[in-house]
Image (cartoon, rainbow, N blue to C red; front, side, top):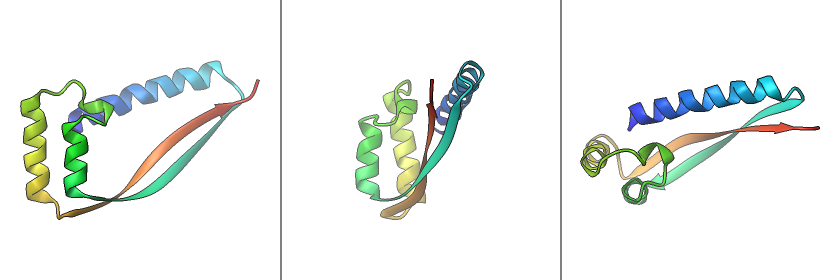
Length: 90
């Protein structure tokens, strides 16, 4: 999962560079969200492939990742999720 996420982030950065090159009047902003979610709900989201980086993973790989999360994390997950936004004016 981490490998897929890193590949996805690299693709996103390439797209951002193309956009910055073609659109001159651009404004970048980041929105940080403090996320607090139960492990049960998070695992359900992973099983249902809510994150696009999970789309190409096999069921076996998903289950392996779920097992790792079950072992390494407590019942409540806390993390900061960042949304990167680009806006432009004509």
